[in-house]
Length: 421
Image (cartoon, rainbow, N blue to C red):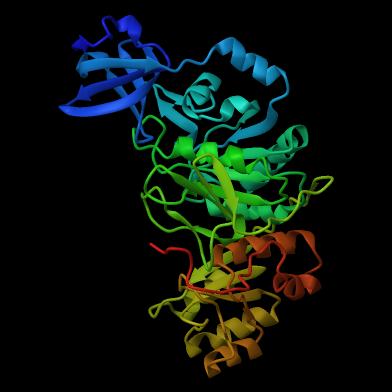
């Protein structure tokens, strides 16, 4: 390491030091977040974080300081900073690697958050940590647990942020959207495609945006993730209209059939539509019927296969082709299931558009035997909604409630989506 131009000792690498340096023959500008045990964590001018050994830095130039006094931070909080509940369930966003010990640490370490999320000092944090679970291992029982913990945090803080793995986040978020009949403030799910220790992590902007969105007196469940691949914008998606559309890109989450509810950029939240207002009290209906399945129709599917799936189910969501079709060889199996009391719902495998079972005879015949068309509702949302309705309402009310736009799950302005990948 070569120190130069005013950065004569390692003591100059303090929090808030503004540096210009070279690393692997590339020049960088940034602000020191922390320095310990031979590692310096720098917030680069690009918005990324970089953690590197100090002895790998060359031509280090100290260009100024921008330091925050810890006592001032504590005073700001104690004088009435907005309270926000944090619930960590697991996933990429809820952990980071300590490169000194090799251990994985929770991202809810207050000092770590304060170093990395620019607006978090404006809030008073109320933290709740579940045993960390990869999102693919979460079950409906976990959805209920997350809902109950979110309720407690919401009642104490008027706003709750849930850290969750991205793979099944839309399932959990939509489940809470239906379970909360009324809510006194926003419940915002936040994830990250890349862990917080990586320079390209999307965790910090997503958290920063969620905190800004949480200032709104909204009574909805949302999902906050990057809007594009750069580190400049994040989007707030309605929980019942969002889907993960890419395995690894930072802008993987998209609102299907429209624009996201809001966009965060340069410290400002801009809403594209008016969210449901917050209520005076919280009402949670957390019963879920587990005997609900989802089936992906394909040409090699056999009627017996579908029959086995429908057996002992109370509802089944079929992801049909196009406008909502399956082969005629399945009509008998479906009719028998409907006659035995199974609610059979038709969605589409297509990413955009909506089911319309009045166009072709196939759809009309399926309707005549009792299949319920799901319109523009996403298949996973149709499944979660069915679980909620069967768990909390009389069975005779199912069809009427299913076709009712309860949480914005139907896209009444059906279109091609917002900048599809």
